Image (cartoon, protein in one colour):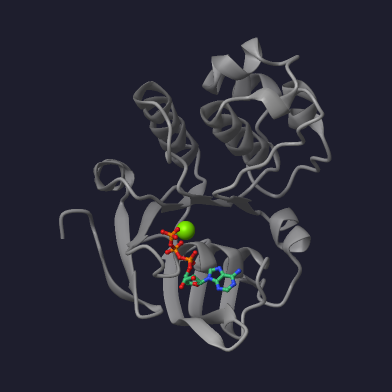
Length: 221
Ligand code: ATP
Ligand code: MG
């Protein structure tokens, strides 16, 4: 097993007095796809938010390439190479697709993807390059969000429910792209409701329950 690029240990976080994460231990290696599954409300989205610093952890550590990220603001964590594609992926609605792909992107430490590679991944985005992002469909917005996260040069991407509400053809495209991204050495932590996709993509599955990872193993385990 290669050294993990993301190493989360004893992560605790919550909202006000309600503790949601009670010591999450999880690793993602380079090029590894880890599926994070659990019931609705089990804290999967909270876990991703706490890792990327959108929610301040109350305990534990989040190490990226050996460097501590816990306690740092989200923009610093993202710049260090931990990208986050949220459930409610909002583009800059008044800008075009092409502008969204160029905006404020300072390449991080990971692989430097180019805009034209994103257009190869998602030909639909090239067709829509001059379209205002506010009028994109849900699937197109998901493609745009994933493309933006890759252009930031991540070492690991955290992806929250990327296939929710998308048509089967778009889902197939996303799955294909995630596989290509992992093959390029980027680690992926994937929160995904559709078990068939997790079983198909993930090299390892972690089950979240009672605020902890209660089971971990290869798919089919
Ligand atoms: P799903 O996406 O299926 O809703 P999840 O596993 O992603 O579930 P979270 O969104 O992390 O779960 O929510 C975990 C718990 O934290 C839930 O009980 C939820 O009500 C609570 N929670 C989430 N966000 C907030 C918030 N901003 N303020 C207070 N409580 C929250
Ligand atoms: Mg969620």
